[in-house]
Length: 359
Image (cartoon, rainbow, N blue to C red; front, side, top):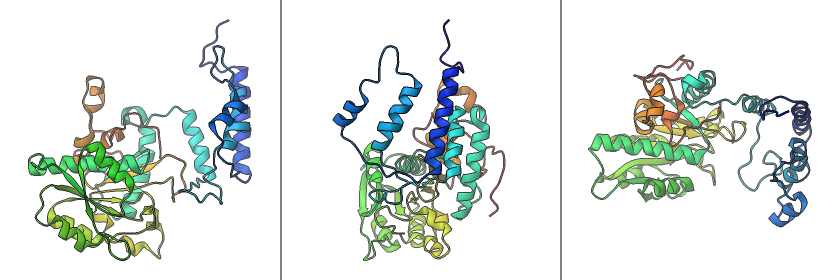
């Protein structure tokens, strides 16, 4: 008797029970710190895993639990201090399991309305927290690197429209010396040059430096500021930077991937003054908002402009593009295969199901 790979069998039931036990043990007990192993050591201990007949789910789970997981550092361990740690709540991990089991696609409203609605609730809350306008909105992407790239693509698109195309010398984006490395990566991908701006004695980018850098230039399409830099948690002079960008009519993107969650801390909230004037803003919930990997919230002041920059046109997408419903895949580059990661703004020309955040 030939069985379908999608059939729920006794073997599937046993594997499900074993995974539930393993998951509960991981959540219930103290996290192991673990340590990395060499490729040769892992190969020797695991052996051959890709075979014509397959090794079966239970054996795969055994290999994971006994060999591979212990060779993978636990980023939620209190002693994990080498890089940026993760500390997802128990509830967020369990909901991540439920979403994975549901094969949920959250790239478009027509396919993932419930998931998109839930994500928009979170985006609306974050927009209100940052004091961005009620019409702000966006989507979730995999991380700060994708968020910075997507925001800058939208910024260049907006500048091209406003200035009638690309300047003869090419586009540039103005960034502080302390900007995250992903901004430089975005510049390489977009084939634009970085214009470095100096920081003050406190490693902050200040409005005066931005104003001096932008003076007399028409080739800068965006300024990138930090709301809690990755290396030192530095929050730039956002209010005066916003003034300088407004005067120069340049897009202001604020990278809060690492430190943006500081908005929730009353003692430092005033340091974020001016953030609400940004044209785009990112924050990673998988850092200090205690969500599982991977999640970056990307917000735009003008989602309609961002949509015109990112929306893809193809015959197989006609059924999605004929309506004005909120499709997260329209707001990032490239994000056509979105898993559910977790505002509900209502930009002009885009129909949003519900306004949730009271400003």
